[in-house]
Amino acid sequence: MDRNTFTGLFLMLLTIVGSVYLLRPSEEEIKREQLLQDSIARAKSVSAQVADTQSNESASLDTTQTIAAQDSVAATGPFGAAKNGTERTITLENELIKVNITNKGGRIESVELKDEVDYQGNPLVMFEGDQNTFGLQFSTAGVNVNTNDLYFEAPNQRIQVNEGDSSSVSLRLNYGGGKYIDYIYSLKGNSYQVGLNIVTKGMQDVVAPTQTSLLLNWSASLSQKEKDLSNEQRYASVYYRTAEEDVENLSTGKDDKEEIGKTQWVSFKQHFFSNTLIADQFFEGGTVEVKIVPDANVVKSYSTNLNLAFARQDVNNYPLRFYFGPNKYSTLKNQNLALEQQVDLGWGPMKWINRFITLPVFNVLEDFNLGYGLIILVLTILLKLILSPLSYKSYVSMAKMRVLKPEMDEIKAKVGDDNPTLLQQEYLKLYKQAGVNPMGGCIPMLLQMPFTIAFFFFFPNLFELRGQSFLWMNDLSTYDAIVTFKPIFGIGHISLMVVLMTLATLLSTWYNNSVSGVTGQMKYIGYFMPLIFLFVLNSFPSGLTYYYFLSTVFTFGQQFTIRQFINDEKIHAKIQEHKKKPETKKKKSGFQKRMEDYMRQQQAAAKQGGNATKTGGAKKK
Image (cartoon, rainbow, N blue to C red; front, side, top):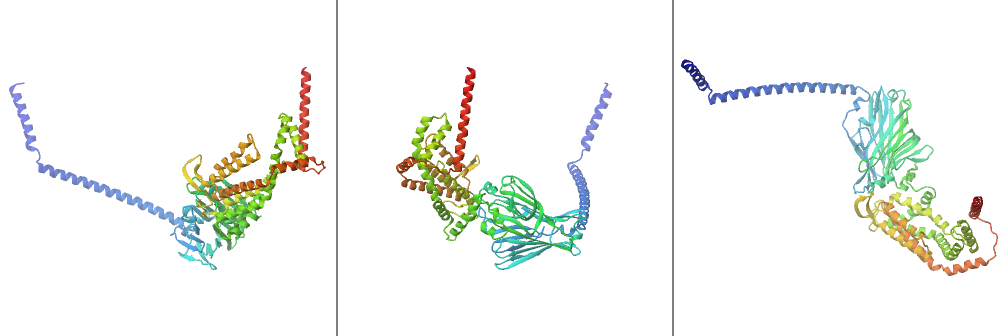
């Protein structure tokens, strides 16, 4: 590179650097440019937002117009005007119940029993809110209608009904052109029944021609009202009365569904309360269903679909009634509908004992205002006094067997254990000579068993015990927990009364073993049952376990007292005198004949077995 070239390049570089330095903007010019760019950016953002807003408003307008169009179509359909409305509540109440009726569906929204509370002390509400549905279902103009979803025309009012008075309120579902469905509710003073008269006017031209009946759907999920949910579920189910006046029920221990024929009433029964729908002209069949639901504090879910015969005439009238009240036997019986058969008083003889003996005596004692703890005490004493002749006879018979035991042991030593048939024959001879009936101690005990078992059904289903306290037991209708803990194998508490009952039974068993001379394995078998009941009865009502405790104590007292009047030596002397008497032929009882036939068959079988053994042995030789 020569000097001229270098000089030219250097001058060009200086020119470029100088231009950049001399032409650069000042700080003020840079700020003005920044403000200009920011203004342009803001303007673009506002423009975009305006465009988005206009787009959204346009979309919203389109949606609103679409919904409006749909509502317009719905409003012109069957009962279109009733598909939207404002919910209002009408209240009917008397001294016993408070009934809230909503114009949405025209159904009873909730029922409160004024004199009752739940296990937490809150007002007792049979059901409420969306937990229940009630409505007519039918088809018209190709559309399925459910009145439970429609709004009725109804006044917004509260009506108090006093004893001796009655009042009613009418709700109307308008179809138009003088065609409608009316729900007319009525309530009398001092009554658990709510009347419901359903009237259809001009609906013969609305209901599809193929329909011969309207379907009445009623469903409810009933909440927990007692302390022990599992025990409450044990007694809860759907009950119904057929046209033949038979009261039937679905399973209480599992989900169940059944088709029913002509029916007078259907009841959603809990342990101590019932919601019952009654038809004066019978339902024309349908279905009933009950389900155990996993939801906390819900006893069960109930539902029924019932057919109401629909005549093709201008007016159809369906007189119905509800019963919302306690499962108190006398209260249910006063309804004159056989509702009292929902109360489980047992089966067979136990049912008749409770119905015709225990209940009448209980009602008489109740009139004395003794308190239910004392009533159970008196009832137990009366029962023991009535059954004392049987108890005495049973104990005397056991005393005779105890006296004969030494002679029986001698027979057993002579005959041996390898020939049970001969041993039983020798025992029967001894019984016959001594004039002792080996079943004499069992028969009186068996005769007492129905009374003992009858109380097992009576006390758990006795509404009168609900909420009644005695001593430390706050509620005789449920268990008395003195200790609660985290559940182990389903047990989360210990009942004091069950513990006392178990101790009393063990003491009584020990005493019986000591005076009867029981030995061997039989000596210990009697101790197992009380220990089993300690767990089985732990969650049962304290009123029941209190009765069993009293019964055990009085039985022990009876045995101890009778023992003082029974002399084993005198009994032994009488047996020996009876042996000396000449044998007289008496007509044999059926039991004796069967025993003798059985012994002969056993003896013949033993001989055949012996002969076969001998023959087999001879052949081998």
